Length: 473
Image (cartoon, rainbow, N blue to C red; front, top):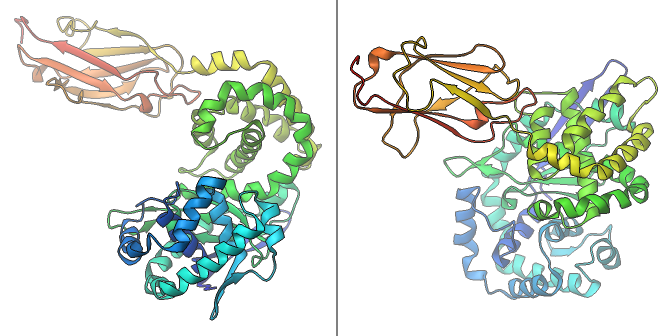
């Protein structure tokens, strides 16, 4: 296995020093299994996010699409729904050496089958045999070595991102020392990420991080990738907690699931067990950002994203966690606070109809616009202003307006724009730029008008005026 870079991070807290070694690397096994999954047509692996790399894969391996291995995996996909983490996890259960592909020395076929029911001892054994044949017949190692430069680009970007991780937080929050995973930059994963068992990692788990691409087709990670990385790292600590309390949460989970199942299926969460664990893990990840906020990653943005994904009670959960922080002398870490979270979850299930009402009515809206639409005549009397009043207090640090797209309206000549107060936004118009007999319009971008609760406008607002028949212009 090729190890190219490793990152040593020492994070100093006020009480202790947490030294972590987060290994960042590309891996031949990971690229082999993701490329094979691409050729098989497995969802999640068929992507062109890193365009230059994808083009090279298709050019090099295109003639092997009917290989015996690919046909066998297509059969397993039909019969056992083999895809996603089943393929990703298979990379960690094989070894590559001068003799080719073999089962990893630290596992057994029985363990593979027990760990993932989509494999059996027989199917995984045959998979390894055919994978070895594919590896040798395609001279895969030659392809892998030829792309060492592109792997190195991805590794450097990921190392830069991980340099900002406060590893001491895990000890403070979970009450357990930080165990550094190996982070595999997986160029063939697209945007998918996986946490997998890794016999070669110090913590015996690893994270496979997919990535996007830049305009030149090269891999591109950015600061927002940190959200995905921390999500997967948190799973390592959240999972044992979740298992301990699942029995107490199961009834509530089954009450909530019918309300959100359609949204959850869009992100491949297909049962009450999964959505509950993912909710708990996301809540804890948001707490990391609550304590370690950056412009690209903060608790408000993460909360809003999770609610849009279907966790419509996440804002309530985040506010409930204020009780944990207000009583840290008593709650030394999240373990001791878990009974309170279980009770919160029960109350959430019992109150879900009200939560749905809150969510459906969460967005602010425009109450009034003065002067009224289409009435340009009142501009002079109104002090050359358009005054927009909102239904609730708004965040006055941002706003956004533009020409109304796909229309012939001329952009209203705005001289200045400002918030008069939390309810009123004012566009100062330059009347000298208005022409008789024309139609003017301006569009308010809903995502730049946020309530103080950080919800965007409910609708895009188009403001339209005309100067037909105005004699004073």
